[in-house]
Image 1 (cartoon, rainbow, N blue to C red):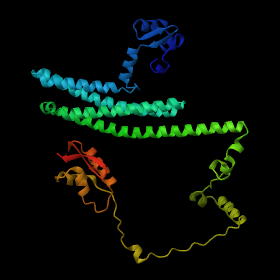
Image 2: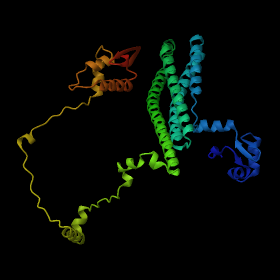
Image 3: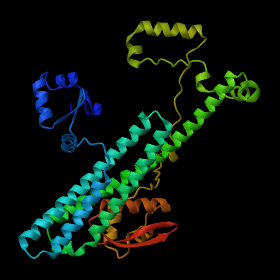
Image 4: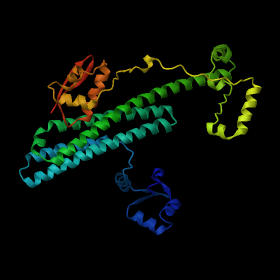
Length: 373
């Protein structure tokens, strides 16, 4: 019945078959509250339905409030830890914070996956254009809400220096690193989702405009006014779309093994060539290579060894963006390529970066000030 939960309500006959054909077993499930009887139908109780969806990780709903609740609970336990004097209870609050951090990272990634699935389903399966567009707009708002929750949690982890300095625990440090990695992965996925949602909405608008034009043309065709009120004949005469062209036949290429081993095929090909006036052409040898062709030619590439740049940055005193601008790449690079390298290094080495929280601007590009630890 859980596999068919999309039906929500089951007729009694179908429900009996799903529980093994025993009406007594069905009655026990109803008495225990696992199933709820509504008239001549039954449905799974909401408590059990939510429980199975959480355990099996198949819940498709995007719950931003659950992440916000995790953050609020996180603040509470950090406050309890800082005010507690008993060592044993302090350890308990510290373990609670670590578990809540894991839960926040897991739920954030799950929300991003569900958001991507719901976005594709809304665009590909919703037949109503108005509802389809509204669903995508609502998903876009949820995407911004998830991003706001990520920033709030990262801000909390950066601001609670007192807690993390007192809770000197290697497990806590690893958990914080894993959660930050999850947030970076979720943030990049959200950027791609936002881009896809904008693309889907634009396609819906374009399809809607095309649908309106087609309906108008259909109306004019029914009223026998399409030739007098439109220039459709002149437009079609000036175009030659692929579906109006004659059918193209692809050439059949025979393998070399077949030509070498089958003499009948060779005879047929020769007869076809003679019928079409084709004669065998002699192949000439290619010209010998010149001295210039044998010279060594070197072409510089724009590829940059990110590991080499990072090691050089660790030995410098500049911030990351200024160092990237000053580094000698041997070839000329654009500001967009510098910005891309900056993002790559910051993502690949999050634990070795010291983010000051300050920002600077270079050629209309705002970037955070990052130093090596």
